[in-house]
Amino acid sequence: MKIVAIAVLAAALAAPAAFARTPTLNGVDGPGFTITLKQGSKKVTKLRVGTYIFKISDKSSLHNFHLRGPGVNKTTSVGKTGTFTWKLKLKKGTYKYICDPHASLMHGSFKVT
Ligand SMILES: [Cu+2]
Image (tube, rainbow, N blue to C red; front, side, top):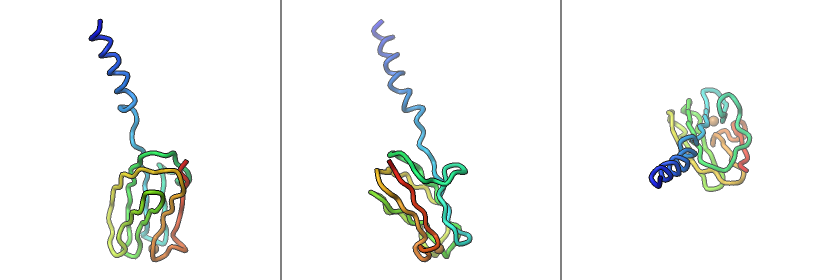
């Protein structure tokens, strides 16, 4: 009986971790003068505190993707292109993403609560 009870308890404890998947967000800059951050097809405007996977596609050597906010300051390179994966812990606050050379045109933000 004791072994069964332990097995049931272990399964109950393991279950939430098995089902909790890290959400993926997709950031894109370029090839034109655009910068976006989406979850699926939806623009990201607010998120809950937690860990997220940011998949960044830097599609232009004129632009970069620079994300800044509480505890985070990550950027791709102006002058290079590529796909990058960042696993980031987001805290409460406002996060901004910009293209550094064109920040007045290419910018966005979201709130984490
Ligand atoms: Cu730019």
